[in-house]
Figure 1 (cartoon, one colour):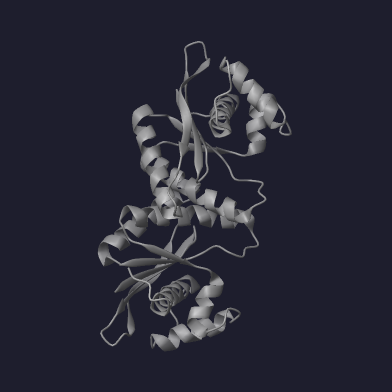
Figure 2: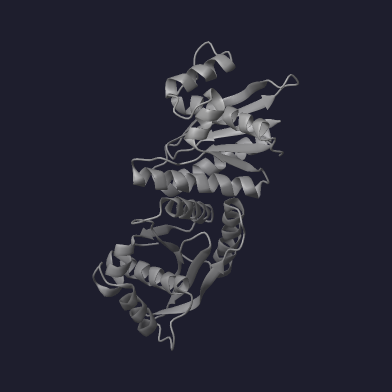
Length: 162
Length: 162
């Protein structure tokens, strides 16, 4: 199974592609962060759509896992990120890739067992799990790895099929 | 000039296509409301994308005018509508149709001169302006006509070029 995890944003979008090995272990195939330098929201959404479509074609994931906008302080940012999420969901449907949305709480629960874990704990787990000498930078990349791994755990745990 | 106005939503999407005549007057070419009956958000976004793309191809508007999510009481609804707006903005960019977003306040300002006007006043203006015997139903359709007309007034007023 190949899983694409995305930490959505409009300026930086973290992404991670994981693959299951026979032993049930997950290995990272590829990961990174799209730095969106376009100025208008329209151009940014268009750029994200292009990069996302390329990634779908290159890695052919069976499932897309997205971090859901849930708690937020800045309304403008939340609405703007939701626009980007809308584009990702639409394109995943268009390319017939099912998607799963996880709240930040669920991501923590499926990684370290409790929703109130702090960011450092999640990052430590990601570093250990994938045997990284150093945590991938920027945080958006590490977050996308966390999203993908949590999605995989949710799928296993709930015996979801894709 | 042909203007496409959209009152975005995920269950009902109002739309209106207006055309300028030589006298500077605007006439409605076509308008209506897409009733989105799909159950999942992914399917709804996909359906909206299909209908929107068909409308762009059919009417070839020079500009898209959208009502912006601005004030809201229900966070979940606002985020969900923003996802639909993201899809509309992305597709307008893909088809090289520039877009304009107007807040509810701006829409009222550009129609009846003050932002605190109530919905009835706006509806009355729409009915008079387009000489409708009755206001088109549902409200989403009338709202889309208001969005398109306000967008046109903003373009004229600010001498924007498209």
